[in-house]
Length: 195
Image 1 (cartoon, helix red, strand yellow):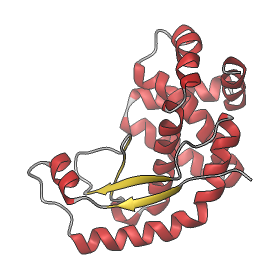
Image 2: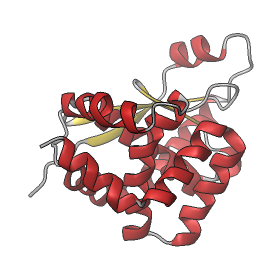
Image 3: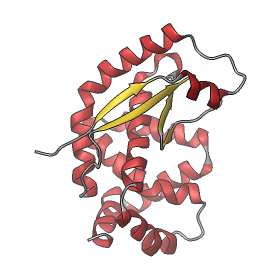
Image 4: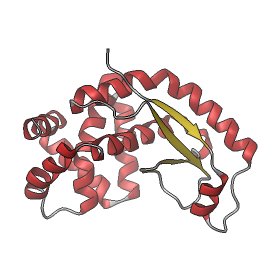
């Protein structure tokens, strides 16, 4: 049986205030209500998603618990370390879950020395002319596509691809590369280059 961590959703007023500077923060009751809603939805997904990430990356999670900081949704984007997620807009919990998986993929990969070997010996050479933001998302998108198609559907995958077109050229170009080269081929290259 594959051991997976538990994601613990937490709110830190100090962290939220630090990231959002002088902006008015979301109300504490709204934040805690959202955390409860997210936890309920995530619990249904957690084990299968985190187990699949282990299978695809061929490496175990290093911790038993991962804190995910929830912050007010202002100018701060989600990021992987420390794992930080803004409140979902308009209760779009599905998009929140998909973004959380994206950030967990980043976090998982940067924990592995073999990822940096793959980065240096493969990504930097094969995609040397691409933006950093494109290069860092090629493997993340490939694994995420595997997860979308295994557990969800093409419509949900396409929503992510369309969203990435809006948020930046690097994200969008990474999806174009994944679709051109094939997500299975990219994952296979990762495994072949990290044995």
